[in-house]
Amino acid sequence: MDAFLAVASKREVREYSDEPIPGDLRRRILHAGRIAGSASNRQPWRFLVLEDEELREGVAETVFEPTNVLGASFTVAIVVSGKGPLAFDAGRAAQNMMLAAWNEGVGSSPNGMPDPEATAELLGVREGERPVMILTFGYPARPRDPEDRSLEDWLGKAKRKPLEELVETR
Image (cartoon, rainbow, N blue to C red; front, top):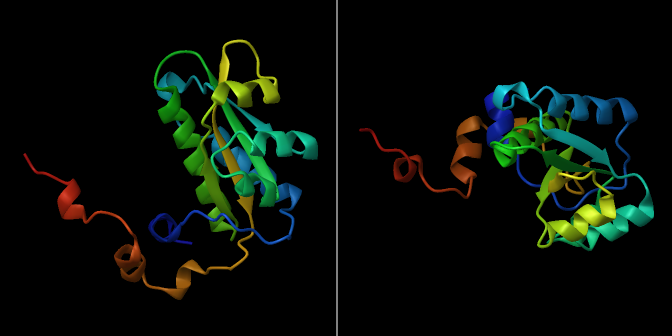
């Protein structure tokens, strides 16, 4: 898939089918996060794959939309440690994972936490670490094909501010 088409057509998916994501594709998604750029190449993240059903159910109760976690076939918690632009670096890793998944027809959604400390406790993170995002992945319940529309259609249908409102030339 064309990279810009992938960016333009990627939408958050919150309803997943029951089809499991194969192990090799899970690994590919995780590699995409691993190779993301980070400040001074510190890679301040770890990816916790939530396979234990009881843990997933507990973590689901700590995010804003529990059904995203409960319905997903693959869930990854991103935890960070250290100083610097940690949220930005974690966002780069997350976006890499979500775009790699989308390239394979797998939908995803980032999930925020109203009480990250509660999530950290459930996850048993190391001292000095904190969870910044819970990513959910799965094949969309309503499949979408990025190539069903033109790039211009995807750009036009995006519920985003027009470019002219966001860009200033100085």
